[in-house]
Image (cartoon, rainbow, N blue to C red):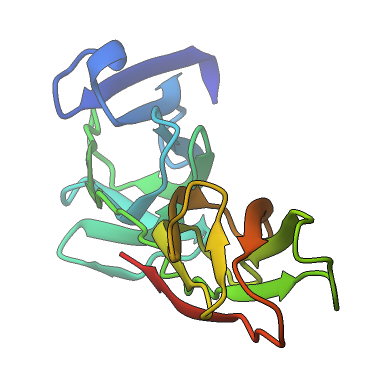
Length: 221
């Protein structure tokens, strides 16, 4: 072998590296002594940050060159055409193929390479399941004239946010809010997974005797 190396490259599909996905570079000796085995390389590079799939490099050597071996081995090779199934090529990743062979007594050998690939646009949707838990606490007994404070705790032990959570508390007979209402209602616009919110309800008794308060409803839209 004598002389230096010649390098040729092409960006696919636009021909411009800045707007292409793959760059294929071929490097071979400028001159080789007739009958002497030599090698050349093909380097395929992913110009993007995304994975390219099913990358295939093809090299057409014609009848003037006999390929003895390559690293990696060619997936197929017949009729002067060799193919390498590279597979997936990660973002910014490069692979180099080294081809070894000898000229068949001709004056000049021209080999032409090409590359193909598949690029997928993927979108992942995560499915979550909100779960609502509610607890209510208050005093066991109060004087008729004393204010009553109930505490309502709403939590979400699920894997996703619960939205538009509506809490309805129908107060029992003999109990009403400080504004004179028999029902207390509030809405939580969003309760994140693992979050807890606490609300205090101020009420009063209108008669003596036992009163059992029950939280009537909770929903998530």
